[in-house]
Image (cartoon, rainbow, N blue to C red; front, top):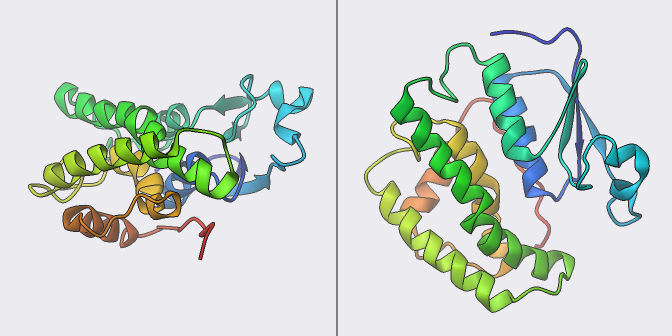
Length: 207
């Protein structure tokens, strides 16, 4: 595995699922990194300095030498391409790579509009349509549970970026009022991710 010349810098918020998926992957890869908490409540993410790193004013951001990268899924792809020469996390086979990309799209689509949005309402008080977000979550989880009935991880028998991108907001969906009790295959998959060497949890926002 390639090792960076100096620790990466991760700009994050400790309750951001987008930031956690990057923190999780850095830990799974065993890469040295420094956490830099961004005070979203005070508007630190809207300062000119931070906007120069992340034009949309969002966490996470990483700095890796002279490379600055925003957007959690883009960061995952960068880290896999840069630091996983085995191709385990981002396969080079066209079909396998496309299957990973499908789940990255779901993470930016249904996962963001469903479990993540519902959690924004419950945890952070965002004025979003909570019932709609919960309905999207339920629809997503029904599909995801059926998909996982036939495989250990989202793209097959081994973990990939698909699992990293989908894990956090699925695991924390109950914080947004989207229960996981009916979905045994999802809960078993979450446990398998949590058993991976290097796994780190995101702190709970609610008891």
